[in-house]
Image 1 (cartoon, helix red, strand yellow):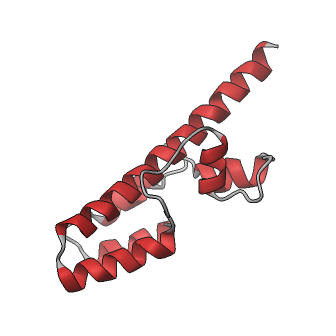
Image 2: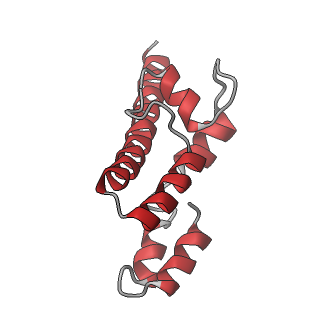
Image 3: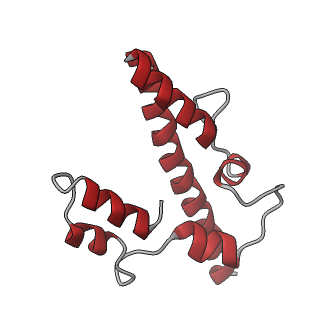
Length: 120
């Protein structure tokens, strides 16, 4: 999700996060966008695409869900909203947690690759 999307959501849900908190989250002095600033623009991978799923899988990560995808998670959320099935809610939470862990795995892989390159 991009900074403008977070800003829009902060405006829609002011009790959840303040505009200052959103700006601090995207402050370039404190954070980088790992995917846009590093993965997409500065790396090459032996995968069919640079999206997080094939990259994380290349790094050894596996999602808990057998068919993980952003589109599927939207469907699961819509089903949850209709049915209020806690199993579907947990599937969404697991998928989102796995996405975060996948990005961490890619970050660690890149850090290790950089360390090898600077030590050799």
